[in-house]
Image (cartoon, rainbow, N blue to C red; front, side, top):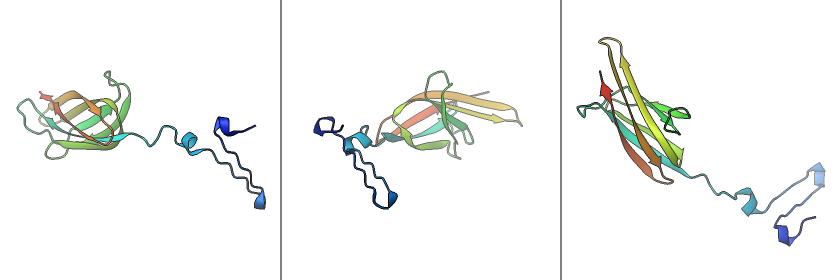
Length: 127
């Protein structure tokens, strides 16, 4: 049985064979809208020059196990992720070139805050 104390409203309408069920607004959106933010950044080598074409991956833990998203840095080494859940992330970047053989890699920690843009620089070591 439903009453004012349990704050739920249950309405059944049997017109045209349709049953409508409604819950109080505070129950259907109890957590509110998702908390989202943006992450932008740049990949640079040990000399501070941009690293273009790096695969940039987001992980939700420090051990690079909980993969979340991926993008590629542009010609200026810049990258961005839009509308991410507010959380702590590890940003990992990797770029490999076959001829001449070269590999660049690096990572950085970033905290995405709701309704804000977080900026991060991923310092990469190239060999």
